[in-house]
Amino acid sequence: MPQSIDFYSETLSKWTCEFQNREQENDFLASKLQADKRVARFLVCVVACVLLLLLFVDRFIIKPEFWPTLALVWRGGFVVSCLVVAFAIRYVNTVRQLQLFTQCFVIYMFLNVQAMVITYDDSYVLHVFFDIIILVAIYFSTLFPFKVSCLFGLLYGALGIAMVLQTKTVSFHSFSVVIMAYIAVNLVGIVISAQEHLLKRRLYYRNERLKALALEMKSQAYKDSLTQIPNRRAFDENYQRYQSTAQRLVGETDSVCVAVCDIDFFKRVNDTFGHDVGDLVLIEFAQFLLKSVRPTDGVYRFGGEEFVIVLTNCCKADAINRIHKIISDLTNSVLDIEEIGYPITASFGLAILQPKEDQKTVIARADMALYQAKDTGRNKLCVDETIT
Image 1 (cartoon, rainbow, N blue to C red):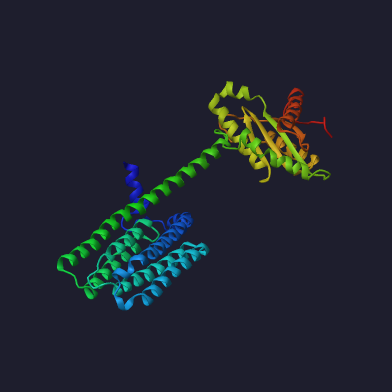
Image 2: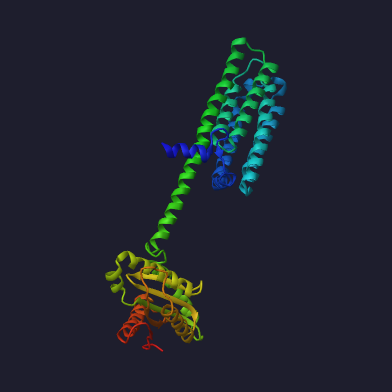
């Protein structure tokens, strides 16, 4: 319940049935533009079809002086106009264009339909039911903003009542029924239109939140929960791009270099200071690596105290120099952890990514170089030389 109250009070206006945030409202309208175009074309075609069908019975209700020439030409012209509008809607590209286009057509239709009332028998008022269908379609379609729909409905109802009063000779009872019909369809239309507008926006709002949540979940799936840097799954996801880069750099001095690093004596940190301090070491080390590489490079946590660095568009000598710089900076500084008063160091293994080489192979070669670095004293870099 609190979420529902918050939704209505901070997101939607119950008076205008729109998002209070104008940008959010524009995004919503843009999201349903294509659907609104289909609805508009359908309704215009329905109007054309109904007008054609009515031609078969028009001669029974149209005054003799208007039948057949004037009535048929008028009705035929209106049908052609509907077909032209239905075709032209396909080329509408923006929400504003669609609203202006359809509003102009509705005004044109209102004036034509009410003008036709003059040609009907003086005692004929059943055309009111056709007016009711038009009003229902306008309210339910939600093609227009809620306020515009209400304005159209009320004005058309007033125009319809005025036309019956001025051009028809009917009993007080029949005239009362006409008035009640227009009032009833407007009241019901306003209530249901408001609910339709709110419901569609509510569904859009929830769908957008679900999309955002899905993106966040996908982002988290590719992010290490502790250090908040990309994880092994992210490396696998990006590996094809690294492979393509390596293929593109064949014959060049630059290449893609993959380094695997491991924090030296990390188990000792956990055993001496506890796992909370160990976690801080991992977080600080991850941030240190991120600051030590270029934005185009990649840093990934593979698990435990093992990290992978990918240096793109980088020659072997340059990669070696960069890793040595990282080792030197680590050795000569203490990570920002109060509990530890000595430098945290790491060992590195470097391999050059070969075109069409899978990720397991290149990581295995870098790992072998890393083991060599750890076996020969740690806090150093060893380079895989199996492929030159």
